[in-house]
Structures are given as C-alpha cells and as structure tokens.
Length: 369
Image (tube, rainbow, N blue to C red):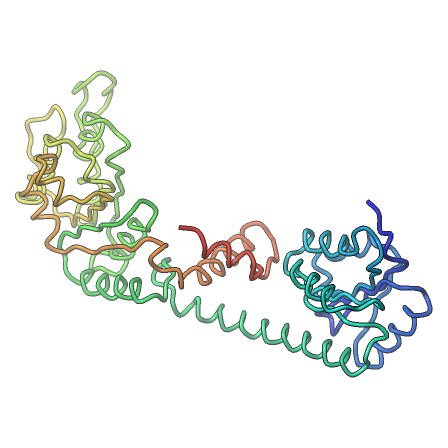
C-alpha cells in the first residue's frame, strides 16, 4: 500500500463531530492546524496515513481534508481507501495543480469537494461551519426520527405509509369484535405481526394466542397439533395431549398459510368455525371451544376455490373480514423507519453504537425490487 502523493497527515477533530485529515509538508500542516484552531475547532494530529485510515474506520472522522498531487499515477488512491473504510465520510481534496476536470473527477469518485491551494481562508471557514451545521442537523433529524419511531409503532409493527396506516386502522376496528379474520399478503409482509397486534388489542388480550404454521406439517401431525390426541391414537402417542384449540380456548388461534391445508383438514376447520367444537384424534368425545380464528395466506384463495383446491364455504367463513398486508416494495417510504427500528433493536442486543446508514446504503435499499 503506497501513499506517494502524500507527505504527512494531520487529523483535526471539529467540535467533537468532524475530523479533517490534512496531508502536506510539516510547515503547511502546522499553519493549517493553527488556522483551524483559530476558527474554533480542536485539531488532533498524526503523521501516519495508515493511522488516518484507522481513525476513519473507527468512526472518529467525519470530514477529511487531503492534500494531493495530480502528477502521480493514482492521485485518488487515498480517497478510494477512505471511502472503503467509511462510505459516509466527507472527504475534501486539495491540490496546487487545481483544474476543473480534476475537480469533477474527484467528485465523481466520491469526494465532497476539491479545493485549490493555497486555501482561501474564508472558504475553508465556510466549509468547516457548513459541515458542522450539517452534522448538528443530522443529529436533530435522528432525534426526531427516534421520536417518530415511537409514535408510529403499532404493537411492534413499524409504518407510516398510507397502506400501513390503513392496515393499522382496520386492525383496530376489527380487534374490538370477536370474529374471524383473514390476512392476505406475500411471504414476509408481516401477517403474523398483524395477527398478534389484533389479539393484543382485542377483548381477549389476556387469554392465550396459539400460532400454527399449516405448511410445516403433514395432515396427521397438523390434526394432532390443532385438535390434540389421546394415548394410543397413533404410533408414538404415549400420552393424551390437548391441541392448540383447547390450549387457546377463550383466546385466539392464528393459522399461518391456511391455503396449504388439504380439503380434509379444511372440513375439520369449518366444523370448528360453525359448531365451535373439536374432537381429539382417537377420541369419540366432542369438546366445545370458543376461539377467535385468524388465518393468513400468501395465495389467492378465491382462485383456489375456483380450481377446487380450497373449500368455498370455509373461504366464505374466513374472509368475512379480510385485511391485505402490503409488501415492503409497496411501502418504500417505511424503509428509513425500519432501518432506524432495527438499528435501535440490534444496537441494544449486541452493545453496538451504529447511528445510521449512509445515504448510499439507503439508496441501494430503495432500489431493491
């Protein structure tokens, strides 16, 4: 790793927020160091370029000044290395051989600015003050985002988009009534979170919520999971166990991916809804249960009914109240909030102090389909 364009390095902490790094000869370094101090900022110096990159990597630097020569093979080497260490760094290059083409090339490569030498003191002061103001503003925005996050959190679900606010509003209304609900949306959209929210704000919030993934089990295991079984009902049934409907009696049962169930299982589920009764596997006894059923699917159940893969009567019973959960691609405006939510969550979980994503990283997130 070579640094042919650079002679020395100076690192200056700007109001404990920004850290300019200045590469030049000792005399110019000392002069600029004094100038920055006179402008109200506190310099901290080093003469090692590797140390400067280390400080950047550790997040000690926010603004970097680098004096370069344009007559070398790669005058932008340090710029590239610094941006790899921290893509959010603001790096300002300085050169005596200033040209418009060089300035535009530096900016294309990710530099914040390109200044001619000798430096204009007023322009330097304005640059430092502008960057300090920018980071003060970002701190203020971050504080507002944290408050907004608290205001826009709906029982563990984050969203401010019109589509999600409509989901929240409909969920509040439905939760008051002890009725069945069908949640429709793509995998990963948050259907289980919405189901949990409906249960938490319902009149039976103090009762149990049982969750079952219908796509994860074959029919025999699913029937035992939902309805329970008696000892000896099948191989391995060494004791009598209640199912989820009994476990959550008086509360809520959430059936995820209900569209994956067989027609035989659908008939048994219809009996629970219509008659409020269940029968354990291997038992003639009929038990009464009173549960709210929340089902979820990523399929078009109406189309499944037309093809004969889903019972029309069960669909009618489940879909009297239907809530569509939008995919993340339909609510891109929620991504910044989700970023802040997950940063806060995992900072706490892993003892980190990551303040945010760079604009470049956020742009990449927003470009995903």
